[in-house]
Length: 209
Image (tube, rainbow, N blue to C red; front, side, top):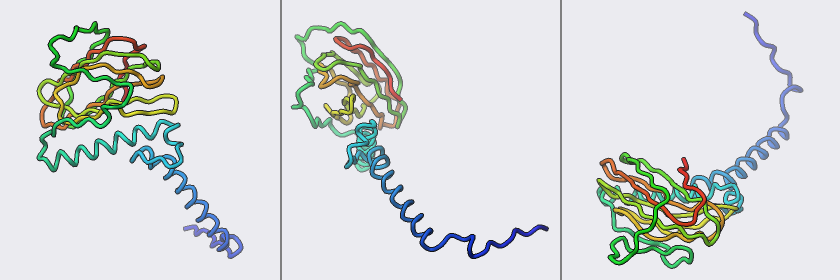
């Protein structure tokens, strides 16, 4: 059997080289942690690079969903009443789903799909700043958690969030050019049928993965 030659002392890296390599590796890991991992996983973006790369909004959604899952477990899996966090933000006008005198909007696009327990989906409207879109979504067979938000050109905004909602109806006014829409999550133990209808001034309706 052939045995490899044992390296000489001159061939081994010096202590100074080892320390330098360790410092470079530690600095690189810290940079990756601050600029990529924290924004993408937790929505923490001290350098603002994550928002430019579109990672911060993804991390904010993950953090919100983690909080929702914890709250659902603590409440025994029953959805709590909807809590709106940004109802006063300029750019979104939410109408009552039960208004008797409201005129029926003309829907341009409709989507229907079934969300299994724990499953989520996101739909976005491509809109110009100031454009207005009417919307209505309903949940049959259960209730859904939702996050109405927007992103584009290095900007992001959270319009409204809710838990255990049977549906929403209203108007969305784009705060800036970009993608504006909803992320839904089924936290119940049964399949829920989601139906989304949208109309008004938007360029496209797309499903994002």
